[in-house]
Image 1 (cartoon, rainbow, N blue to C red):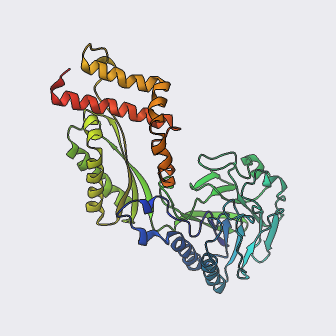
Image 2: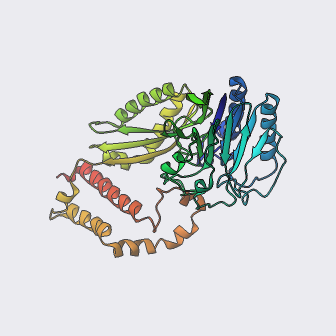
Image 3: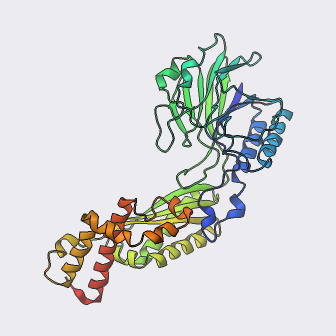
Length: 420
């Protein structure tokens, strides 16, 4: 017996952040989640699996139109033509309360109950599958508590959309403990909701397959599904299968010890080529993070916009159109010690002390921001979607900017003959 465990397909979900930037490969990735589902179907047919499990969030929310549902139906008929069954539980994004449109799914598909755990038994395969879907978006009850014990003489599988005891970046839905899962006596738990692939436990196996296609810069690395083989009631093989067509990555460039801006670009050039090779020349969206302590810090800040475009140009050159830079993050620090320079009894010392007053005196900072209140209220909503954006309610970001301004001024003054 062979089966595929997939989850968090988020069919027709947009790839967040792409549309805001010139040069992004929109046409190539607009249908990425659909292509990932097509890849799943093709692999299931190729591997001649007996069934496919989908552990929630097949959809990304209510359909904009019926095309989302029609596409899913068309793919499921291909599995039906190959004699492959599909068992599904709903998750928080496609809960019964979230999907207002409805289409009849092919008869090889089974959507498990959202009211109580339901079991499906395939006697010819010697398998029992137990699961319960979400009736509403926010399910905070422990669903596992009502799952049945394993059926004797069968290979038992639990299908569940859950955060377990908590996972960073994911809402605590259908919480439960590993011990509670193991107490059911199942041979495999097919979990969804957490988008990062994770083998939580082996023998018996408790597995998050992760999502099938990364959708933003927080969902990096290969995405796909798990292919599981069982013989005589014992799991004999489990392996990951890549399904994605577009991949997100983060590249850290350490500027420590570098003395020229060109050195940053040369270091990045090598890192980009390596990233392409590791990902088999797949189209990539990259977040580039510059970090480390360097005398270049002031120059980097002063020429930030120019440097960011140099980095994008480098990515275009290396990737030949296959690499797109989603964002450049500057997290470098300077070599000079502003705290010591603030003690000087001259204009430079006075200027640095004034800047520090903003940093440590919350009222001064609030007063300054108050003058910009009208501007913040006029900013488009998508600006605030960026958690690194400047906003009065994000004091950590503001203090970081104050520190950057201090170094920029320091660099400008010293480079113009201010001396130390």
